[in-house]
Length: 178
Image 1 (cartoon, one colour):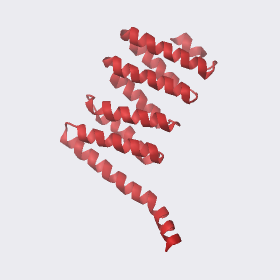
Image 2 (cartoon, helix red, strand yellow):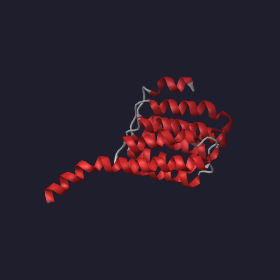
Image 3 (tube, helix red, strand yellow):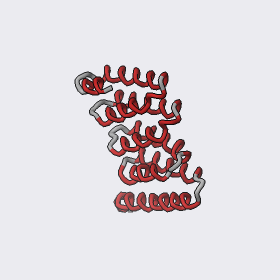
Image 4 (tube, one colour):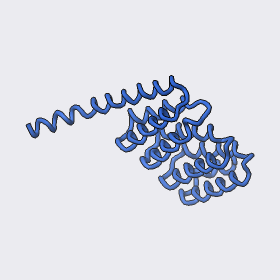
């Protein structure tokens, strides 16, 4: 894996996608080796690359989550870190959707909530909507009543945030028509 990591920065995204697809296949074929392969994927996810390359890495992680139960929590954590700096709206939305499905089932669901709420505050409207939906899924599927209340507080803050961010636009538009 170290040798592959060494030359990843020197090849084009097309070849990177082929390598990531091969690693995905190896992971599913040899699930006991998931730790090193997941570490490799999370490392290349931080590297420079275009949409197709990043999508291939995210899809590989999705497959690992689906087929290798032992790596689910670690893979979700890596995906959370990725959405902090993700420049691709589609990937952020897909990851937030997966977090909404898998996060509430995790042993410690609260560790994903901060990453999701940050998307509500810091992202564009599409990602915000996906983050709000993901938070709602946590609230609906939470076993702990304290977690449900916390999600309710965050969702209420989100409503206030949207009103504050839209207020100047609403006032300006009202003046145009008033």
